[in-house]
Image (cartoon, rainbow, N blue to C red; front, side, top):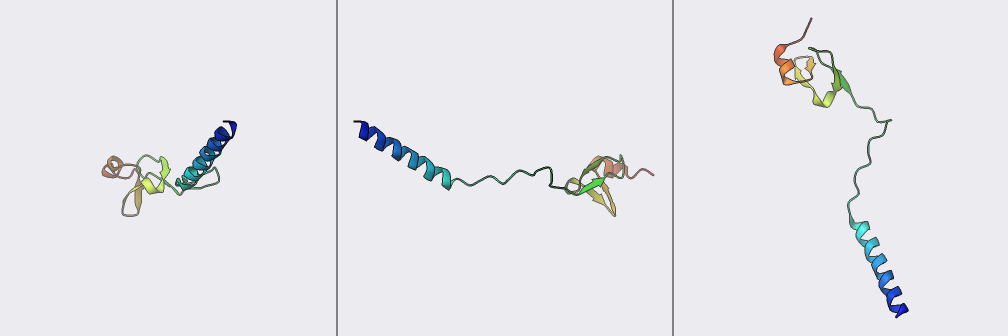
Length: 73
């Protein structure tokens, strides 16, 4: 009986290892060293990630509302 339980336990471990190796691994989180390009809103001056920018001409804005309001001088 002990040999049977040991055999089942070994099979369970092998099954879990095989299953874990087939899962896609999540991408590594961005650490503190990862830098992201930033922009400054032409209306309010807030700094935000450049990939979220709303542009008009050569100016960037943090939102569509600020783009409509225009740049502050």
